[in-house]
Structure formats: C-alpha cells, structure tokens
Length: 471
Image (cartoon, rainbow, N blue to C red; front, side, top):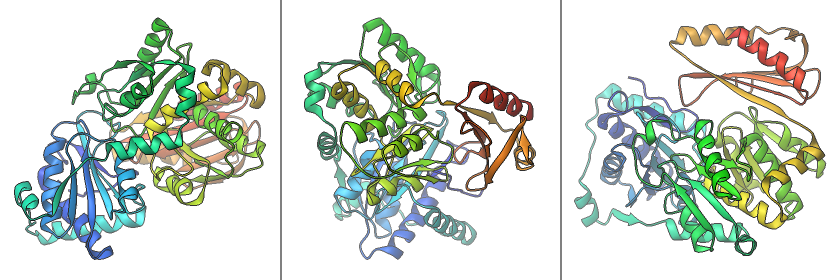
C-alpha cells in the first residue's frame, strides 16, 4: 500500500494501514531523512491517548535509535504543541508524535515536525514518502533495537517536557489578571492529552475548574475527539448549569480548541480567531500582520485592516501558517478548523494556549465573552460562515463532485464571480458582501469540504442552497 502524508502527517486505520510494519517503514524513512540533514540527530517522541500509542511510540524509538538517531521518549501522553515547544527549547532536530489528532477513534497516525517545531512542509513529507517507497520496493530489513538496549547504550532517555511548556505559557498569558478576575470555568478535555496541562495550569493559578472527560478512553466516548458540534453543546449545557464564565475544550492531541461563552453558546473558530486579533492589538499592544488559511473567514483580515495591518492568506494546513507567527512576528495566525498560534510562540497550533487567551480576554477586558462578542459585531458587522462536509465513497465520487466546482463559470447562485484561484482547491469570490466559496478535498480524511462566507444573510442563504444542490 502507498503511505501518504496529508496536511498534518500520515494517518490510517489501526490494523488496516496503520500497522507495526508500516510504522517501522515510516520510522526508518524519518531516520534516513534526519541523518541526511543533521550530523547527530536528536528528536523527541510522544504519543496521544489512542489505542496502543505507547507501543507504536516504542517501535518508532527502537527504529530511530537503531539507525543513529538519539531519542527522548515521553513517558505519558503529550499534547502536540508541547512536542513543538520541546523541539525549539531544546534545539532538537525534530519530533515524532503518534497521533491522529481529531480523527475518529479507529485511526492512528504519525506526525513529524522538523527542527522548526512546526508541521513538516510538503517538500519534507514528499522526501519522506520517496524514502518509504524505496524501502517498500527493496523489501529492506529494518534494523530495530529494544528500549532496554537503547537505554543502556545512551541513545534513549526519558522526556519530561511538561513544566518547561507550562512555564513558557505563563510568560505569554497574563495570569495575574486572570487570577484577579476570580473566574470559574468548565473544561472538557475530551479524553485527550490536555489532561494534566490545561486543567492543571488553571488550578495552579487559583481558578475554580469543573473538568469533564479527564480520563483515558481510546474510544473517546464513541465520537471523534473534536471540540465542535455535539461536544460543545454538552459543554454549553454545563456552563449554563454551573454559571461558569467560560467553557474551554481541546481535541485529542490538544492542538485544536473549542470555546463556549458565558451564555453557553459555542464560539466558532472563525469568530474566535478574529476576537483574538482584536484583543492582541487593542489590549496587549501587539503590532504586526496576521495570517489565515484560504478556508478561514475574512473577519481577521478586516480586523487587521482596522489596525493598519495586512493579512497573509495561505493554503489549508498549519504548516503554512505557523512559521509566520514563530519566525516573522505575525500577531496571530489561525484556521477555521480550530487552530491558532501567536507571536513569539511555536510554529504549531496550540489549543491550550487558545483556551488561556479566552480567559485573558475576559479578565483584561473586564466583561463576559458574550458581551465581547456583541461589541465585536457592533464594530465590524456580521460574518455568516459554514463548512459543509461530504464523506466520500470512492475516488470516482470525489472527482465527479470536484469537477462540478471546477466548472463554475462567470456566475454561481445568481452571483457574479469576481475572482477565482487554485491556491488550494477551487476558490471563488463574488460580487458583494465579501462573499466567497471554496471546495477542496480534506487532507486528513476521505471528505470533500465546501466553505462559504458572506456578510449578507440573504446572499449566504443563496450560496448555501446552490452548494447543496451541487452535492
């Protein structure tokens, strides 16, 4: 079978494509890649809370150490942004995380981050894929050693990256204001890796925290570990029932966020990213541009313009966004799927940080999030957005549907097409109300996603109705 890296690593179904044999192949390819880039490569290896991830992490470590790569192996499940922080703070050659992030429970994956700390760019993953193909074609016997042998040889040590990461967050976020505000919050860890991180840092700073789903369940309660839809509905109910100021959630590997305001209403990532930009410009005094993926609302772009700054638009995938904040001083970069990072942080999305910024907003601005949201709408107006997902049965179905969107001509839903591009999928901008449409295949799942936005409700309804006809 062909092993392909998507927008955030290689993912496949456990015991189908994601097998020990394929994990060894991918690990050997990563080792070969690292040795071609570094004289003495050194990496951190972590894992999430999915089924058998510790065992897969041991296999990765055994292959890497046997092939000349020094490994720091985490002893407990670890969030993806923590891996990124460790890479940067310890000046490592990279990191390997056994995670399928928000995918359904039957999936597992391998995410490789190079020395930048952010997700690997296409030129890196394409080279790793070529190495995997070569290993498969030649039937290479992959060298592997046991953990005990790796330990005794000094090529493997235990990694404990938690405290360094939490200490760094305390420098980024105003915990003095948060503690003074005496906030009470509900946190939904969704059975994931934020356990012992998000809940712990809040408790350390005196917040009253009600924690949901803070134990390991490889089935994630029978749902994908993604903080949206039904999951945030349950969190909203708890917020209303307890009178909490906020509801905070993270996904399986804690790189994505979910936010619920004091009225129990979910805040979309599109809206929250724009709120963060407004907050950092106005209340933290940060300066610089912002960034968004092509699938993300223009709201953050409008906020930046209000503050005399510009917005860079990238293809979908945080690999393109993260470096803008980490290396080029962008104030905040984000994508509609629930990922963001900020100036002076890692080049990886961080759901834990996003949740802390939500608390900082409420504390520094001295008002509930529901009121902050209303103030934002009064200043900037409405942004109507939606993502429609269509699960695919075959490659033929995928091609058939994408061809429909590729064939859009001078108008769609009675709206004149003003611009189009192929940065990532099929993008069309229309004649009024900052309206646009994007159709693209997911890079992590067998799904076609169609994104819509308009600042006019009737225009938005027209677009949605026509899209549903096409699907």
